[in-house]
Every structure is written in structure tokens, then in C-alpha cells.
Length: 265
Image (cartoon, rainbow, N blue to C red; front, side, top):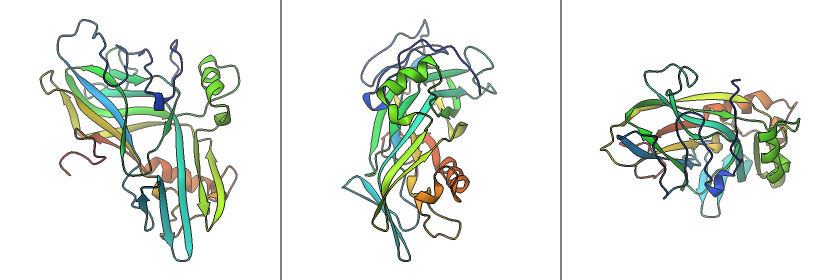
């Protein structure tokens, strides 16, 4: 995992806080502006988060801010889903990785940040950044397990979120009427393609990139049956299956109207 100097304070994503970028400029909260470091051609790009389309095992999103799923006689209700992310970056098409040069990426957040999924089908606007002209074909980020071992940035995060020590993901709800809390220590760098690529030419105006996480697919087996989330906690029989489902559930796309669906779909 790459290491990078971090000197900005940690802020929760639900507060839409801005953290100084390690690439080329600063991310800012929606509705504010930031200097562009001399660039004369740029557009504002906002990062939003969506709870996904609810495609797993007869899933439906409700106004009660939950996801309800049924399969056979089993019923799963997700009441809350949270993830810890860091190093959220837009990668230029012509560069292999965000480490290849100082101008390879535009950074939304260094993190770690706590992302709480909207489970009612809505889209939550999070942070924004002025992006120089160019073509961007990936959103890169890390699903991150904060450590309580002396890392200053993680320590600052854990002061506000002590229950996420060595936990990157948490989901709460009920399975067949019994309360559960699922947690994961998944640590994984992610490179999610933007297809079609995001083109910034300085004249197209502001746009939005949505990070969509379909949590309704997390606790679903290959045959479509529901998984008891308690069997997916650390050491459980379904731990690795659910980790794979989590990674597969994440999509990124341009979403100018912020409706949680890819533009043109």
C-alpha cells in the first residue's frame, strides 16, 4: 500500500469537510470555490455517494432509510451501512497510476473519511474539487482499516469514531427478525473505471461523479439465497465471500443530474 505524507485534519465525509490534496490542489465542500494553482482551464467536479439500485435477492429500498430483502423464508433488513475510505482520487487517462507523477491525479480527499450510505435511493453530495482540463478514466481510493497503533492521521479519525478501530466496514440490521452487526477489516486499494471517461475541457461546466455501493448484494450467495451476516464476521464461514461481494458492489460513473444512475442509461 502506498504511503503519502498527510498533514490535513481528518473530517467525516458526512460533514463534507475539505482536506488539503497531496496531488495538485485542495478539495472543498460543495458550493465553495478553491484556487486552481494557476490553471486557466478547469471545471468543478463533485463526488457523490449512492446506495446502489437494490438488485440483490428481491431487494427494495424504502422511505424508512433501509433495504429489505427476501429469499425463500429468509428476510434481511439493512438499517445502516458505513465504510471508511481514504486517498480518493481521479486518475488521468494518460497516466498509469496516481504515483507516476505529481500531476497524475486530482484528489478529492486524503482521509480517512467515514462514508454513510443513503439507503433510500437518494444521492448525497460529498466533496468537490476544481479539475484541470484533461481526460480522467478512473476513480481510485482505498477501503481502509484505521489502526490504533500510533498513526497520527488514523488516531485523529478514531478520536471521532472510536468504534471503527481496525474496522473498515460496518452494517447493522436484522436477519429473520434478529439484530445483527456485521464488521469487516477489509483493506483494499480500488481502481474503478469511468466508462465513458470523464472529459474536462474547461467549458463543459460543473459535473458530478457518483460512487455507487449496492449493499443489497453483500449478503447474497451464488445461488441467490441470503447469507446470515453473522457468518460473515471475522473468522466466519462466509467472511471471504462477503468481502468479494463488497468489492464487486462498487461502481463509479459520471452522473450530472445526480440521480444515482449513469448518464445516458
